[in-house]
Length: 314
Ligand code: XMP
Image 1 (cartoon, rainbow, N blue to C red):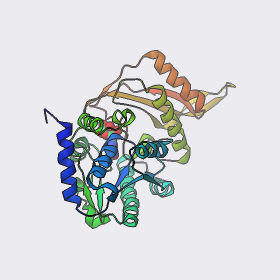
Image 2 (tube, rainbow, N blue to C red):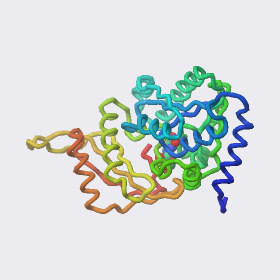
Image 3 (cartoon, rainbow, N blue to C red):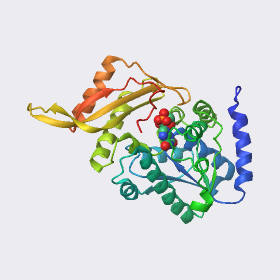
């Protein structure tokens, strides 16, 4: 798609969605990111109030996300129903250490919960913001993205009782952002850095616990705020497995958590380069993390590119 024209794409997709959905009720789960936001707006332009927008607070979303996305959509005249389903997700992930198993457990819990919510709403069609990179990575066996089902042999209609429609599946991130801008979405959504579907669950290496979740949530808020002005594709912290030795303020030895900072530039998430962050900025993020999260005693900077590393750690 060399000469991508977002206006034409929007018009084509709206007619296609109208045809594909017909008179049915459809549902879309927002995550706060650009892909699901664009999907939702296209859906509303196609079928209006027959599209229900929901936000699943699964416990692995960023602090304040539900309120933020509800506010943005409220301004567009679209109301978002927020469902608190944290307990189900924490229970489903309990005891799981392996990254792929975690993704599987997350995916199953996500679609089971979502299918219940869809049924309550009377929706048999799910609009989903899957983009080309999600499919390429899953099909290539790099990692199973939580939102890719058919490519790994799962029939959503048989398993969960709904049909999935993916209006963005041939686009890459850059084109999705062009469409978002053309649709009049605010800059904070158009330029939002990608956030993985399983959220903070895959940014805690090894088993997810409430303590670790609380640490990564605070660290994520700090990194996003401190590095908001850095030009990059993604900037986020990861909570490493295990502990390292440190000293507390009274000079007592303590075992603390380790946080790695992952800041990368990329076009399409298929390859990526680590960002050579300014040292003063790095010091400031480190200080904010150490000062505000006493459980952490070490902050590391990841200098790996993709390949050989992936962007996320899991
Ligand atoms: P990796 O880690 O494979 O990530 O280099 C490539 C891009 O995809 C995002 N990512 C995900 N997004 N569900 C998503 O919706 C997932 O399961 C998932 N895993 C990774 C990642 O943040 C990066 O932008």
